[in-house]
Every structure is written in C-alpha cells, then in structure tokens.
Image (cartoon, rainbow, N blue to C red; front, top):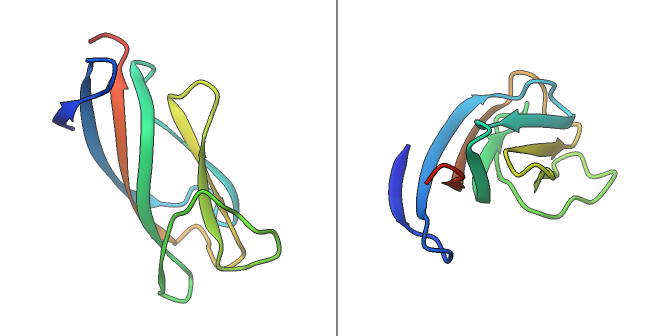
Length: 104
C-alpha cells in the first residue's frame, strides 16, 4: 500500500499492486479488499493459458476467448474479473488498485 495523492473529495488516495492467480479461471472471479477500502479505479494485466499477457479492460464481448474485463461490485470493496476461455486457475495477474479509505 502506498499513498500517492489526494482524491477529489480531499481524502488520501492509495495504490496497491495485487499479484496472484485467478481463483476460478474462465468466468467470473471476485477479488476483495478490506471493508475500509473504497475502490476508485483498476488497471492490470493477466496471462492467458497460452502465455500471452492481456490488458484488463472495462468491456467484455461474449464468445471471445481472450477477453478479460473488470467491474467494481456495488459494495466498492471488491471487484470481479470476467474472463474468456483462454484463462484458467494457473493464469497469473498483476492488478493495480486505486482506492480511498472510509476511515480517513
């Protein structure tokens, strides 16, 4: 965790880099931060089962195997990665999460 600047509401903005493998591979993978963290933005890359690195986007087109996108869940403490069939539980990811804290 690193404080990087101030968010538009005056609260400190933090950045955290997450590295892991996808919990469920293709389909929807939910990744949670703490209940104090409020996600503001996400960026990152994920490695397919064919050893290709793909950027994570906010757009997902059904029936495209290499697609990977994210969406922030309603509670804003977690997000989901939606993955096409080119990803499995061995697929590594690096995700940068930008967030504020409700306790600041």
